[in-house]
Length: 120
Image (cartoon, rainbow, N blue to C red; front, top):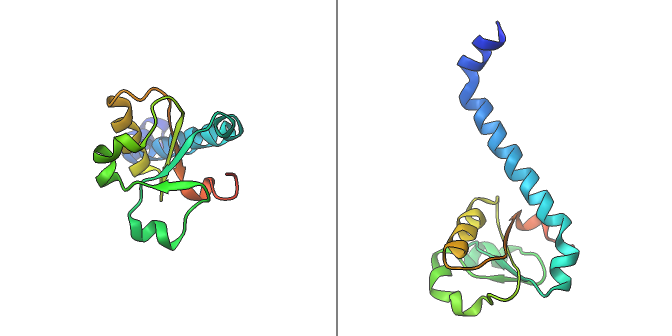
């Protein structure tokens, strides 16, 4: 099979793999910034459901389920960095966009809460 045939046949899988690689790299970049973000008083928010959060969570994270995020903006400071996490990084990516649209300027998607566990 030629490279062109492979691309034509498997482009959806290649695109999906590229997307996951991008998300993984982005969360790694955020995790590398954790010492500085903690020093600057970042707020760490887990946007999973209360049931998921109570089953397991990273220390120092606050549970604000994504469904409640827009109604609880008064609890999230605008003058400090905000780091979001969830189970896989998908809900925290949506929450990141929500906060950015609401005027938050320093918002980070850390991906899975497991990446924060033990680092906070």
